[in-house]
Length: 101
Length: 498
Image 1: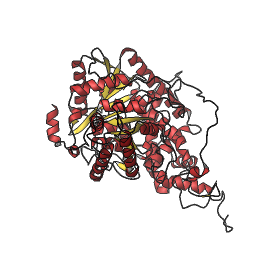
Image 2: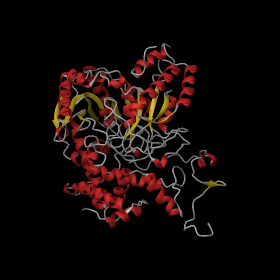
Image 3: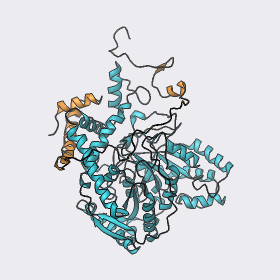
Image 4: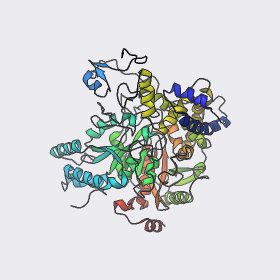
């Protein structure tokens, strides 16, 4: 097994996902198989081979620094789940206490 | 009135120009056809009937000239392409209520070409899948056999064209998501060269691989559509400032002297015998047309799937961080604090396949694993690209099967991610190298369509279209229709092809 449940929990935390204990077992098994599959790359000799992140040869694409009209706040708020007085509203950073922060 | 739903763009265009039909007539008939067909196919997530009718009326008022070749033609749009004022979900619960305030660049081009967007097409969630079964909303069916998958991720885009709901649609292709469903549904699908079509407004899956491209029933219709959606876009930093040929110009049927390569790895074990037989026949057809076809090797292509799942998942894990329930889309109700908004929204909003890829990508990029996974994959990607470069030093075009199999059964592979991933073994290397790839109908096996894949040099879609057109004119596979489009039954079709 290429990955254990503790590692999967750690990765889930990084990815801001959570799994129930049952799901964790299934996901660990599936991820382990997928990781075993991708580990076949280990057999390829890549000594000195450059890394490709993008097939295009363009780098540092710049645009003219011109001011353009932005979006109206009303439009931008259209899809926001919760907002008030032009601000996006989210729950308190820490747990809602009795004060109902 | 004669039925319009099985006609090509070219045929519809001449009826529109001669005023035998209006854009309004065509749009009304399109929605009638969609409503009649959807119960069997389930290709659309959202219909855009009211706005489409308004656009059609405006086009009729303006008139359709001979030059405006796409004017008044209804088009279906994959639901990961952002459409202003039309629900855009990427087939995910997390975007199930997303009403965009802007249009993707391809949508601006759709509107300026006077195409009429009739609705948004089903797909695998965030384009992650090869069967369209990971959609949050519905399972699209193959146009030829409704117990089979339509392929994916652009399954809705392919099935809608094959079933006569629209004559053209847009899809996107990250590892085969246009070509494989085109093959499974017996239509023409093209993934352009990376950088040919703007990705602005395409909901990002893997940014170094994604491209938007057209599905049609004929090669010429496909070229006409690519003409309309291509071009440099300052809003996409990876969009290429290269010249734009008329892709429909070189379609003469003459490919004498064309040098075609057939990679032996594409005909190796794992390819269904019926698929292989159809490709061998296609090779003979190309030879009869005066092209040379020679065997070549792409030795690193067999690592394509492994490279792809690391690179695409890594890019996806980064791209999908934006879905957090704050600014748009679904937000979990079950929250006590801000962390819950992020975690619960993502946990409830993403399906299993999306979670698997986010997890694999996050793992590949995490401390201690980056060099062994992500960096290694990027290096093998270079080797895959170099294999293609070597072949293209001597050849004009590469051909092979699009998919190792014909369409498989709904539910057959969904619980086995690795079998599902191996579906894309013949299409993935093309995305990794940023090359253009296309699938055209090339016969039948087990009563289901087989796709021939054509792979071209960077920005040389013209040669692919030229070869595909010659092949299409020399064969009659594209004239055969699924039963839902008035075709005959499968047995007849299989006998007929010999």
